[in-house]
Image 1 (cartoon, rainbow, N blue to C red):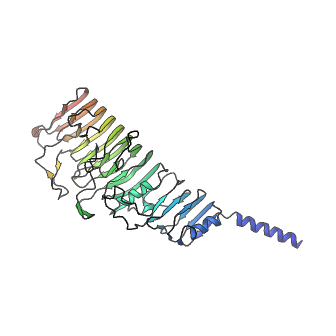
Image 2: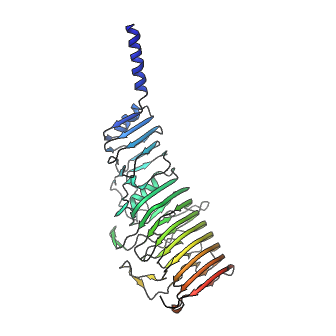
Image 3: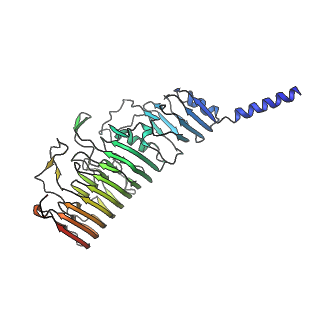
Length: 434
């Protein structure tokens, strides 16, 4: 009888041990083969939840298996040393707070001269994360608009390419262009406000007067494309929602560079102290960056202020844009003025440079923009309406109310665009200069 009872107790104890589903760690140091994460994986036999109730310093490469969920309590995070990679093939459970702190090893100066990649020596988070989406706050991105966050935002975008949805809610202050450079990804920015810098900043021993020429947010990769078989740097990207406020006359709100199958939908742009709204062009700071743009949809855009609403500009023979649809656009108070040549004052404009229309679509004398469709556009109180140079396509159902005819503004101007058809338009010049 005693032996039977002992056997039952032993069996019950074995079942309890074997059925452990949670491992709680107060933190510590993980060396890759030993430490709180290694202990948790072993205790759970690769399946279950590791609850993080203290910071964990990660000094060695380690992989979290797909059967493990990492449950982060607020205020606790992984501190990943420079040149160390944490690979997460399981899932993460956390709110909108920091859980990853990626240290800089200091072996590479974080400047644009470092062959584009400014984070080569930083700690990294990678893997086939099982979450349906990720959020930038996990990387310590400030969502209150109080602190610059471009580099951390970029690290968040690049950490888990297998996760095809990226969700940002909050206010984000950008001091560098953020590149949407992951294929097949839906960027849900419905609850986001992106604000550019409003003063010159010192970076890498030089003075910078804007985030970049690409825009606050740019779709593409900031790198040279050397493959002739895959000429596009990114493909199949959707940017949905968001409010964008460039705050320097050299800054665009959004840009597209060398990309295919791109959608920009339902965005609001305040460009009164910015440059352009949406720009499709090569990167003027790096002439080696070719821009081949194909199959683009820009829809449901509202913009106030700025030099242009849409700017497409291709100077090199190797650049082109084709199969572009632009629809449901409202632009108001687009002054067409160029930024000051010195760039010393964020709001400075160049009164001596000719003003531009709200839509500037130019091949600069070539024929590199084809199959362009523009429809359902209302422009009010703009310097000029539309300028086309070397463009094939069609435009219909547009209204330009209050263009600045007294100061040389035109409702529409075409050059080298013999196959561009315009129908259903209404133009009303302004009664006073503006």
